[in-house]
Image 1 (tube, one colour):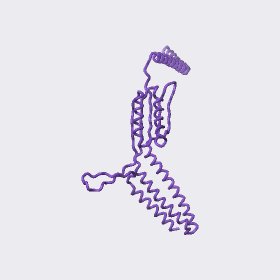
Image 2 (cartoon, helix red, strand yellow):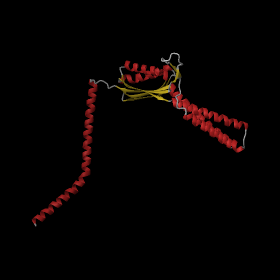
Image 3 (cartoon, one colour):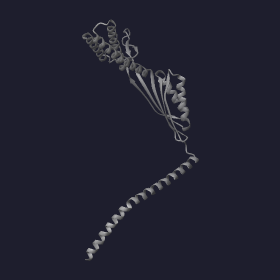
Image 4 (cartoon, one colour):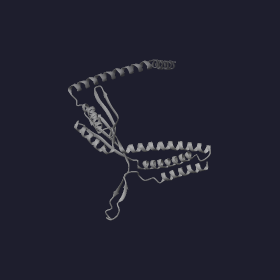
Length: 277
């Protein structure tokens, strides 16, 4: 039993030491030139692994909002599912007018600049304009490095314990404990691999979120007349509502007013009698 405990402790200590020393960044390595020393060997620089998020907001004419949103969706479809994926599409069409809309996509990082630029060009062609453009990059290099180290240590632990079980060296309780340790380590290994795939996917595919807002329609004679009619109706409704409130308030206060008035009249009558006496 002791050798299994020593073996597990050594593996855990190795994993901790590897995680503590893995503060570097995971990424592509490129050679940087050294102009001061022409004959020197180029320095190797590790590029950070960045997960990008694009947030765009556009203001569009009412009649062009839905059309432009569909054009952006078509642009994503033309790139193909390997380079662009639709996450969600929402649009609020109420009372015959286009409301706000949102389009969420996942675009390949290499194509994100092209996609956002083409989307802005389509908005300009439709008579709209950009409101906000935000680009944020999240450096996940350390997470990738730590996850890779954790996967390596768990693979070593699983391999050693599996070899022990294969050779069946030890007592029955020791073998049972080794099987439990293997199952736990394998579960941690699967979780680490899943997290590594998620991080790699965030680096490979950028999140693009596009918001659409409608422009106010120009006022026309028919629109002005309709607006005036709505204003008159609103004013009449407000007047009727106010009168109903006042009448309701009077009905609630009338009994209390009668009681207070009777009390005042009684006090006044007593004072007059006292003065006359």
